[in-house]
Length: 101
Image (tube, rainbow, N blue to C red; front, side, top):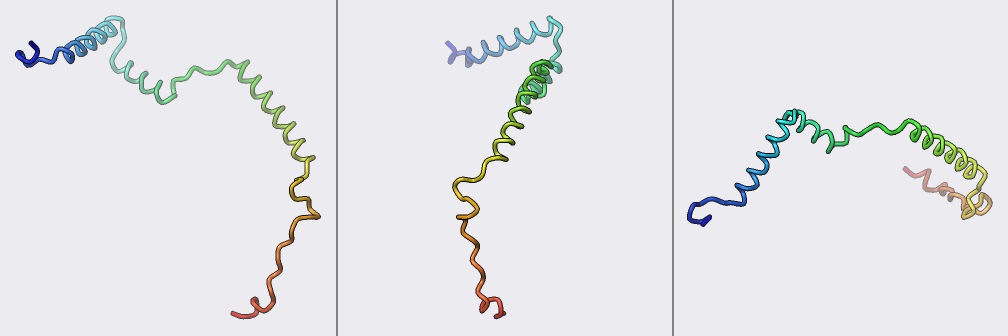
């Protein structure tokens, strides 16, 4: 029957559903401008809720303590793979090559 009337019923049903949803939102007091702005800001991440101040403070203190401990560990530790006495020294350039232009 869809071919005889040249109407795609699936597209009509989808558009009818979208139209009813938009009508419901408009009747509920939302505007299309506000909805599209909220959707764009939500997708880009600018509409996040701010973190709990207590949680943020606790995480900052924990990472600061971890950073201090890690700095103390790395400061006291020497590089065991190449101790200073066993490091190869850079080869000295030969005097013959430096004299020739």
